[in-house]
Every structure is written in structure tokens, then in C-alpha cells.
Length: 112
Length: 112
Image (cartoon, rainbow over all chains, first blue to last red):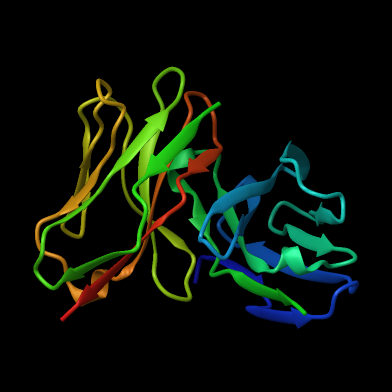
């Protein structure tokens, strides 16, 4: 199946820990994104990578760092997790055509 | 900068009722406009789109018309079903941009 897949689906962890969320797409897309959705369903872009280069870096804490080993993967590393980081994180990808943005199913992060 | 404003939810309707979810936007130039739907526990899916003024996007019985004079892209459906229960996001991509700006989402609940 062609898709954007992210793991894990659920992540529960303690404050101060470091965690990673993985994302992979097999669509041959050039651009991948990370979005954060808060408890009120507000969706905000965090990062975008095009051919392994960061092209958008919205104002997010530097505890968040995207890592792209190749253009099919964009992982999100989070250091020193805080309560306010609890949210659903969505990976997405596109071919550069903004009309074909495809989302993963999300990772629900709960920081205790 | 670009922004999207959509009506506050939640919206609760009886099955077969008429649905309208209002969306207005602020952008320079001629953006493309989108409606995305998020079913419970899933990622966002593109529902419909319109790329220029007076275009009407339609899918699964939903429609939205790109109104440049009122900077609006209201979502409508003549007869909703229980299966339409989801969160609906209005979004825009500015001219020449591949980044989507989302509204805050409107939760729709359809009861039998």
C-alpha cells in the first residue's frame, strides 16, 4: 500500500525524557512535514523538509529536531519532554503539489 | 500573513439535516482553498478543493464554492449522515506556496 506511515501510534512518557517519532512515505514525494495538533484540534505546521533540506522551521522550541536520513523518511526527535508537548503529531508528505498533501494517521503523545 | 477563520464548533445535527460550515480567509494574491476531514483516530484527508475564483469543489455530497468577493469557502451538504461525523478543516495555500494554513477545525456530530 502506498501511504504515509508513522510510528508509534501512541506514546506515553514521563517529563524530561527524550523520545522519537518515525515517519516514512513510499510515495516518492519530495517534501515531508510535521504538524502538531493540540487538544482543541488546532493544527500547526512545525517543520518541512524538501530533498533532505529544511525549508520551513516554524517557531518551535529547539528541543524538537527533525532528522531526515533520506527523502522517504522524516523523524521527529524531542528532548526533555514537557507537559505542554502533549498533543497529536502528524507527519505528511507531498510531491511539491500543494493539492496532494497526504497525512499519516498521527501519533498521540502524552507526557505525564 | 495568510490566515483561515472557520466557525466554532461543535456542531450537532440530526441525520438528513442541511450542513453549512463557514470559512473565510485572508491571503494575498490568489490562494488555493481546501477542505480536509479528520475521522476519529485518523489523519486528515483531502475532501475537496478549488483553485480559482468561482470554482466549486465537490466530493461525497459536500460542496464549497470559492468566493473571492467575500473571501469565503463555505462547506455545505444537503443531507448529512451519521458517517459524516468528523472534524472538518478549512485550509489555504498561498499563491506560489506549498505550505497549507489550516483553520482551527469544526467538529461535526450527526445523531440518528
